[in-house]
Length: 196
Picture 1 (spheres, rainbow, N blue to C red):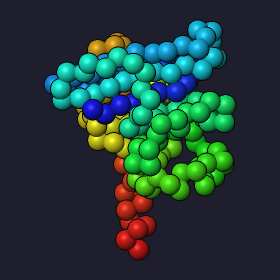
Picture 2 (picture 1 turned 120 degrees about the vertical axis):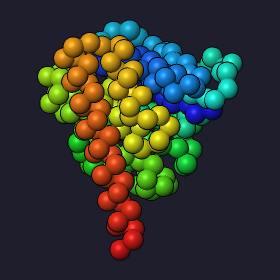
Picture 3 (picture 1 turned 180 degrees about the vertical axis):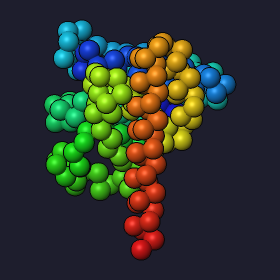
Picture 4 (picture 1 turned 45 degrees about the vertical axis):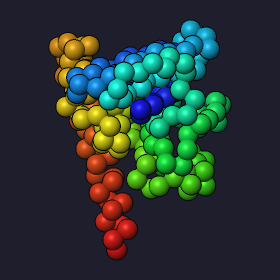
């Protein structure tokens, strides 16, 4: 079972992000579930969404305590909430930011992870470019597909098109595709740097 935790703030679509990921996995013939927890439902309050993906039926329904991947939609949560709780060193970490890990104060912390499992992506900026609004959720799923390979970006795009229509769907798909390409390019660059 692959377990994902999505951290963000109310109004960022954390619940939608987890749901889209579960729909993408389901489109690939896998079992999936998504659900949120709310500390407070007001706009701007920290919100956590959970998603589980498996090839077998999923019986667990409690919050994800030991995630295989953590997606952070709002980098300001990094030093306010324990977003890394339960994440092992072989887990994946994806952060929505245009800043580097050192600027986020995470350079030392992420040393314990494999280099190809920690990634930043400017998801809000890509959403703003393609949608006109800084909504990072669907964009992060394109990056997630590239980073983990747990779902295919085509399945993410299918889930986006099922949830949204018209220009909103097209903008989210374009942004998710660009995030996918962004992460693939970073991973390839890291491979080249290791070979040198």
